[in-house]
Length: 306
Image 1 (cartoon, rainbow, N blue to C red):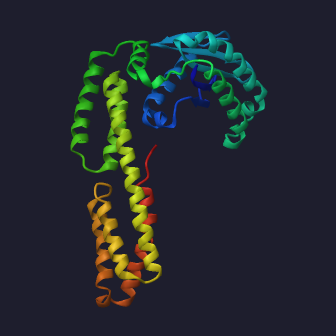
Image 2 (image 1 turned 30 degrees about the horizontal axis):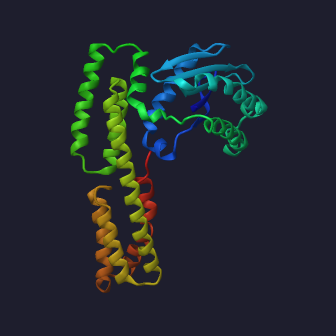
Image 3 (image 1 turned 60 degrees about the vertical axis):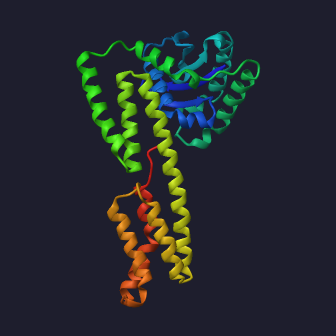
């Protein structure tokens, strides 16, 4: 049935509501794919009219209809075999939207105001899905991406050559980079370049690797949090031998995440704990204070643009 639903403001093309009816796992794995799809359907609304427009997209169809009461365009993506059924559902979706007309005409972007509307949309779509076979946009990403890019026309040889050179240079640095955060940032850029090159294989390859890197970083951050919590607990009870052990383990987990000088700085804190009897009192107190601020110091450094 309905695979994805978008609502764009007609004049600005601002996305004011969207719902992808895929599993959470697929949404995370293929976030770049859905971003490319969203960008494409936003461009399609430029030519939408008062009547329903139907655009073929590989094995799927994009259905666009204008909702003049809220100056918006409703975009629904569905599998080819479900088009007839979805066309029957679209008026019901429009009815729900119009029953919440004030929400979209006077919306202050407060998420809680969308909850009731969102629930009605989900219930309508899922009730229709139970009556038919389930398909997924993510099963044929390559075909859909190719269909999108074919509709945009061909690239000039010079643009293709420049993009290919940019990808090759970045890919070399990507394959040799050891820092996971930098590597993740590079993977996002490689996805962007692959989209510009209209190379579905590279797009999907980098997208999958980017998700793997993101998961690895999140896993490492969880382990760092565990050791940092132990560090702070042991400091509170002045168990400095334990603090040293946890802090040193924490430093080892920072490898490939932060710059080496930062790891060395935290290791120096650990050595101060080990040699605390030889350290002046005020200097030791300052080190304890610095250790208590490690979490705050790393939060921004280890943040991910997701």
